[in-house]
Length: 249
Image (cartoon, rainbow, N blue to C red; front, side, top):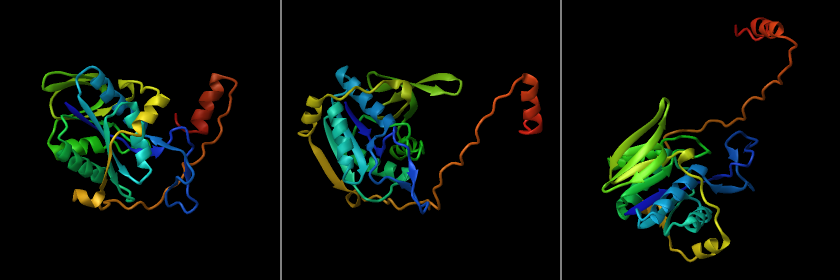
């Protein structure tokens, strides 16, 4: 069984994001970039399935600028077998990403497609669902447990009321949630070995995909600063302030 895992290069989650002076976008100049945390979980899950003998090959794919190769090498160091880099300088929206991933999937013919449930830069949470629709494949979103059987995969997913388990016929699309696993620490020998693993480069134009944006980003702004809290001496004073000043009761 072949697994295709999508990974995205984003601003590292430890970095405090800054907005450009003109408000046009987020400033990523000289900022540490890394693999999207949800995508790390997706790669880890694919590697665990391979170690369990359920998956025979793991292909990781990323779309974006030349530096995405670093993200792919990280995934290869985690245990993926080979990588595909769709090179483009364009800012891709979720629908365009889903179309590109479908084009790669049509070529690779994986039985399992694993994605992070969302990227921490745009928080769109759309790509996996759109990809499943384009492939006309069953989907299991927000997965907290994945079990692969004969010709199907069981996905326990987190919903508002608790947990739901769905059985999907392969090929299927899965999006990973935080509680699915904890990604492994990548050791130096694996990082060195990853440099020798195959990495295929494809131009976006070669996929024949319409990646034109559907949205126009008008402005990016930081959230308004919150006012400092205050201490009160009694419950009666708290109630009075909530009633007379905050006017919430």
